[in-house]
Length: 444
Ligand SMILES: Nc1ncnc2c1ncn2[C@@H]1O[C@H](COP(=O)(O)OP(=O)(O)O)[C@@H](O)[C@H]1O
Ligand SMILES: [Mg+2]
Image 1: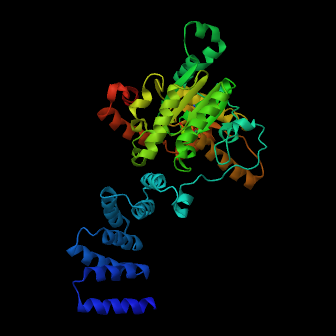
Image 2: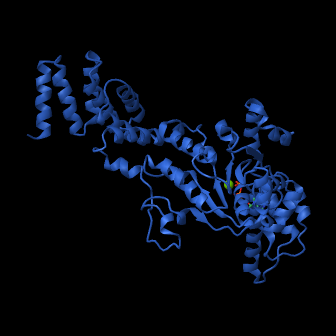
Image 3: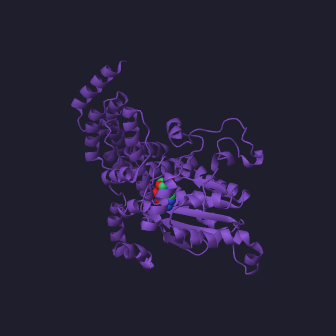
């Protein structure tokens, strides 16, 4: 029978017996099948008025809401179904899909992970697709031992290791950071016997925090170049954007590759993403990765000697204090915007190899308070563009002058100010154990 005829018949029958909930629920389900979500929702709601605990109708209503893309309404019902009664494949599946549509990626992943655990033989193609690693390995011509490359789809040494040819000479200012890195890894590598004699470890963890663009990433890379160490830069997306359940495995894998390639600088950018304060990390999938990370840092099952882990963040207040326990990131260093000396040397570094004529870097540095290294880079870019424009007109390429750079600086606004506004609030109201005293000192 044609579905419209069927619906017509059901409606007629219901007119005769309007209190027949079974029939009404049947009509509602048929409406869903016919794609008429709105009408289905009306019927389901009527059934639920008289039988508020009818689970199939609740699920039906959630489906109808999902069909109308009313995600939060669907979530309210599914959350309820999920928490009461025996687990049902259909509930898990719909719940995960709706959460995904609503934008709760982490939670959706958790629910789907649970579904796969309960019903391993009933995966969902669409959700599989969503939670999968993107871009898997090509042929193996990487020059790394095959042993270092895991099975296909797993993170390989080749994907992880980046070459770094910058050194401390490319980093302006940041003396406090250079000193700390010197103590933790450079000196120990130069005098390994001495360190061993005193039972001091080579390596460890350093957490860099501060406003964006002030050289955290740049510094980590330069450290690797300085000590000719392997450099592994791990983005949180590398760990999380992959098959569910594989996140911990991948975290483990990254540390494995790092230990095999010592001395090694393992850099974790935006480490706050691991810090348990983001809503999606609060759920199980996230906390497993965090625990795995902490275990790797503790090095209980492995030797972390010769491994320097540098974490960087613009949002230190989102970092779980557990990260800062001894043996993990036991040094937390504030990376402020460069002072006038710092800016002078950053300008000199950034202008290397560019056509310049008697540029008074110190004068420019004096006029660029609050500018980050990235801001100074932007200033130079602006000045270069202007020069190029006029060279196009006149046909004569002219070198950059102090005047050009000052003019460019005048058009650029320092990007560090906003960060301090936020940071100051945290420093004033959530300054556990004086962690942010440095920020307060700086903003005075
Ligand atoms: N101290 C510095 N010395 C030299 N260049 C710097 C410095 N700080 C920032 N830069 C320049 O600015 C760019 C952005 O800095 P980055 O290290 O990415 O900042 P962060 O990681 O703190 O946000 C760098 O690639 C570099 O060119
Ligand atoms: Mg950075």
